Image (cartoon, rainbow, N blue to C red; front, side, top):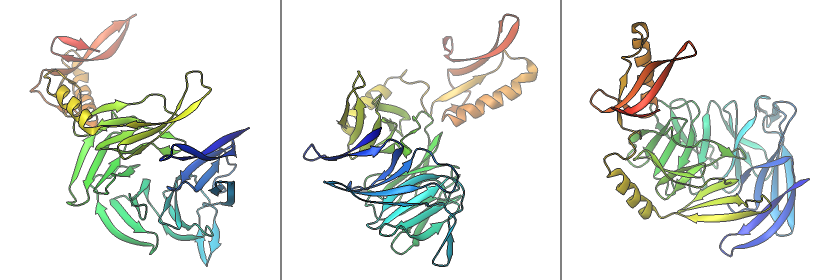
Length: 364
């Protein structure tokens, strides 16, 4: 069995070439120009011995293929490279002549494309890095901030401190490189790279995940796109989405997606053009309604534990207050929105249930 790689000229809307690729390979990275790709086998026997394949395509087919073990503990130019442990989590092309990898142990390597020799290494990185919009530099997270590296000089060009850096962030530049989003499971830190101002927004509503080990995160217009869903970070709500994509990639004001027919016999590459002005007007219209989206990020909510036993009230209120804060809601006594805990007896067993309600109206 084999999978098929398809090279498409998006401007001409034509297929340039197709190739059969062994089914046990998955694409980890594709060069912006489309002629290079990094593939990995779907399984490997021993940690540290994982093999990656660098393939160069031409209109006639596969022009060349090289393989290497980026985690193998080897000696190159008198230096020891590779830990012999972990798995490759992230791969991307950076600059004109380099490739970067990140392992599950947080080790970032930069490789020379011509001979796949390591030229730089950075330890103790966090999460998934991001290549700058011009494709020439790479930013990665550390315990205390984000570093920007030039692969040509192997030097750190700058460092941006981040308050309360997440353990496993994903970095995403916007299209003009003016804003950097540091995204984790529950929050997104937006960094204005001109003023260095930072703003933390709670984004637990974002759909998390990846397509073929590639994070589906990016910007479409002024909206952050995650798993084919666009979110207005300031309003704290998802505003547009497409269900069922086999693969998706944000680009400019478009979302490119591979979709499958209902009979599962055909695939199509589709482009969804997004109009930021249309979305913005709809969002403003909805937010202008007094009862719109009462549980969205930033709303005030009161915790009510009055019906719980006395010995459980304090602990329950503290836990629920922390839960609201984690979800981006604001615990407050000055609101008619209530998260209420009560005891319900079923078959002789007592269970704590929670209702979200606006005074007397309840949504469980």
